[in-house]
Image (cartoon, rainbow over all chains, first blue to last red; front, side):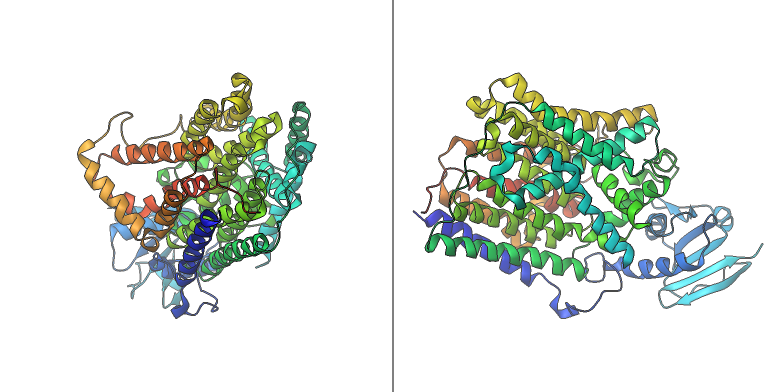
Amino acid sequence: MRKPLLLSLAGSAILAGFSVAALPFSRGLFRVPRTPYDANEASFLAPAWILLQRAAEIVPRDVSVVVRGEPPDATNDSYLHRFAVALLPGRKIVPAAVWNVASAPETLREADYEVVVGGKALAPPGSRLVLSIPEGSVWKRER
Amino acid sequence: MRAGYLWLASFAILPLVGAPFLGHRAFRGFGILCRTVLAGGVGMVLLSATMTVWALAGWRWGPVLVLASAAVAFALRGLVRSHLPLPARRGEGRGEGRSLTGIALTVTAISVLAALAATIAARSTSPDLLLFWGPKAQQFASAGTIDTAFLSAPHLEYLHVYYPPLVTNVFAFGAIAAGRFPWGAATLTFPLLLAATAAGLAGILRADAPAPRAAAASALVICALGLAGIASSVAGNAEPFLLFFEILGVALLLTPAARSDAGKLLAGLFLAGAAAAKVEGLPFVLAVVVLFLLLDRSAARPLARSALLLLAPTIVSIGAWLAFGATRRVFFGYKGYGHSLEFHWDHLSAVVSAIGIALWRVGYALPFAVPILVLLATRPKDRRVFLPLGVAAALSVFLVLTYLQSTQDPRLWISWSAARTFSPVTALVALASFCGREEPR
């Protein structure tokens, strides 16, 4: 009696076929992605990932950093705080927003560096530009 | 790139840690590839538990952890005196049997390769890797212990500090070896563990069935998990670890291995891995042990001894973690999503429909529908089928009740979590189709 076995194999083949069909062929399967989220439902993370990886190369350890989006959005800024904790290890991350509530402006001014994801940011007062790429900019607060 | 390779290479230590236990002659019937995978699983559980105990004692992690974990594996091997050797593996079969095995292995390989391609193409990366699994592992590696100051820092409550420690410990161990936490390499744990589950499952099932039947059942499980994993983006999170431990733990209890102390302790170690990988691993373990003791009386006797062998690794592993949380005043037990035993039954229809929508979005619910259809068509008659099906039912009830605990509208939460949390259910249904079929010769 091979019917159960053949049914298992047929089911497996269908599932394997759909697995292959789920691959992102249209984006170029063999193109090296710039971030782990390029072809993902969470691809909106990609710009922040690229900017924070670049920021990690120039922002020294043990300094304080605030990461925010442009235009400002408390929900987006809450997530950017979390991404900064992940991608800027060893720095003190000052949240621009927590649980979708924006932090007080004076809290942000305490940070030594300001990372602005997206858009064209106005220079934060008393800051100089240290990195500008299409995904955003990094500013150093002059004391 | 170099850090990524080193991080992945550190996983080669895990089978070496578990090898002293899997070297026990009771396990020889599993074959070398399967035993290597099982040793890796045991190594992961022992290394993670040792890392937690080290942190509880206030000691910094170092290379001596590996020796301590391997010593525990030796000690466990010494504990298992009586054993019932597994029957010799049956032959590959001839002609058609070999062809069927070949087809099963081919579709399994396609699924694993698709998971690998999806991961490399950045199709299946989990946001949870960036949100909490990665940051915690990175910080623990940097601190050389489970960093209490980090876990209790203001504004970091989203890290789910009470989540059990296996995934962060294993990630941190590799990061210590590599010098940093490699985010891209961490995503490769999805195809790696899917391949390990495939090799381990086929080897375990072969202890009870000819190669075509074992390979076909394993193929169904792996193909369902492959598609579900690709579509629900599990690369880099805890699901591949959870499923690896859950599926192999239950599979061990479906084979003659469940009749020996050695087999029960091995299953117990895998159940401990499930409990230490994710919160829902703990109710899973309890359901497995209770159902095994109730359903397979002849294998479970003496009941107290069997319960001890199956549960002791989980008690030690999770006990050490909860003791760490309590002594450091970081967390006290697991946190629910609402008040315990308070369920919002008015959300029931929304919960059920949201689960249906979430499963539909994963390959048109095929990873969930196909194993059910195969099971219905197969109609297994063996009593053992009630173990995976009973656990699947218990886990489904637990998940629905968890969603019903939310005071808020749970639909958004369900939309991004249900396909992942219900993956073990479909894997168990697929595994149930293995039980009690006639064997092709």
